[in-house]
Image (cartoon, rainbow, N blue to C red):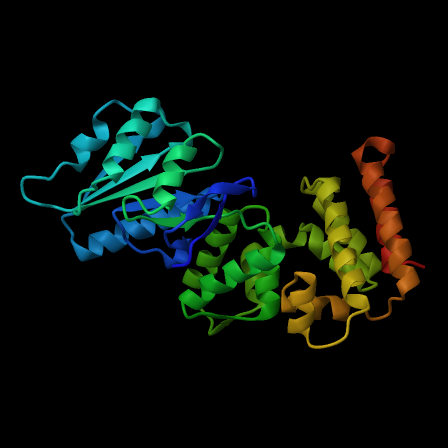
Length: 345
């Protein structure tokens, strides 16, 4: 593949050039050395499990061993990677590579010069500068490795695509509204989102998963979600929004993310308000998913540019109020919801 500059977990360009395939967690393939990088531990764990199952499917006699690079004993890698008496393939999973000892660094660099053809060594590096020399060597092509990049999914569109892929992989149909509902309810934790998707896939005895299906399973979680409160207020349903707010607060919801949800929705509406053209093209220009553009267009019904501006200013003030500038965060939230429900009037 074409050589390109590697990027570290901090996003800064690294000095080394990448001469090995860099794959996503769901496009992995075996290699003598498999470097798993990125801060999203859930995706990294899933990738390593998938690799183990792939190797085991090829040969059920696969031997699996684990090494902690942070507590590495000299000679451990060479011992585990040595050819076995009966020639069984081996998988060596190495954790905490970002905390590696000097002995691990030295011995692994030596191992890269001539890796055992029947052994797959998986190196999990969670981020940081420790181990850069080893990562640079692997990325340069030494050892014939591949890199599995497991970056954190930060954007709503990325989480939406992840959840959609979960249902697509299981050949299960889900409506756009149901998909948005489950992503909104579990957007703070990717592991919980994946678990919720798998629960719906496994247990929903319906041809198509709808919002009603999601509500049956996770109604309580969805009802207390900040985005559901925001959706009701933006649509002008003041009474419903206030009821949902009080239910959320009674369930332990934090006012700060509640305000953040309103800010996110209004910012997206402001971005989309002056745009014209197909949703896909607008999404590309604004860094959004097409469904977010479609949703913002629906949310904009009844809103004016002046109303959006006033609402955004009030949301900024409410953010300060709930973070300590005011004495009554609940009152600040209710005032914000009242103004948003009147479309900023």
